[in-house]
Image (tube, rainbow, N blue to C red; front, side, top):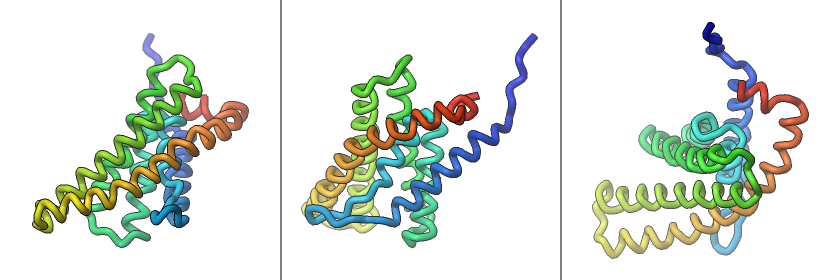
Length: 187
């Protein structure tokens, strides 16, 4: 007899909503650092991928970031959609790398975070290039100058995310296991 799969998991829905809300809120707080503004939103997107896996973590990361762009960032629908896709991809890649392991070692978590962060940086640079070259029609020297000027802060944010996400993940994981939330979310 086949086991019937439950279509609605309230623990999963609630956990993803909380994660999306955390991502939204941490995006509000930015700190000046080396001529850039650092925030922990990318860290939380990576943590979402680590905790909930590629698809669900991607949904939480994309949703939290897209809601920020829509309500606090003042972006149009296309930019909100691009944000959803790029943050989803960031968490997806991170979650996919960790999911493929039986037990995620610290090294695998760090590698997953690096891959996820670099995925986001690459997509953000692609978006910048396309907008500058094809939407705004700027000459190529101006396009590349803009891409390079945005690359430095993006890499700083990626570095902060790669350093902090494993710390946040390893701080939260034992509590989620101890309370049984992690197993209820996975069920």
